[in-house]
Length: 172
Image 1: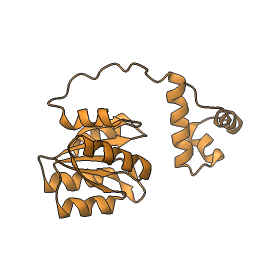
Image 2: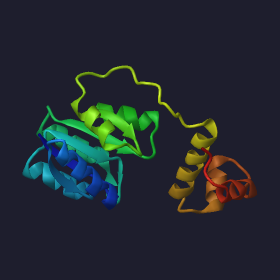
Image 3: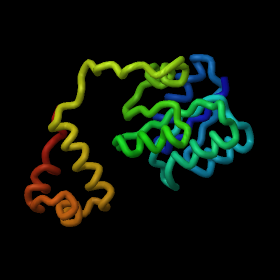
């Protein structure tokens, strides 16, 4: 049960690796796309947990490499920026599942070992519409290099309105 974990969030990477080792996996970790690809070339794992956005590129490149080297491998994509388009792309490139962060070790373990895709369960505490909107605004803000004017332009909202939203805490 070899497992490759690729994530640029070092504390998360260390915690997840430790949790998966306790569940019986032989874990190899990487923090970049290049390190992930190199680990796959050296020894293609049976399982992989790969963050979508990494400092040097896209985790989908790692999934593609994994599937080309070991077609039977099960890869799970993790992302804090989930949307339908990237989920579909991940699955087309060979990902077995797609989980939104923050995902815990139990969810990841269940996704890696799932026998089949069942209907998704309704979450106990789904995000409110306000929270989803707030996270979308935060993502665009980060993608625009924290430039308020550019973010406001892309979101088609007044700059001052955006500033007020950014100054508030995240809704629950």
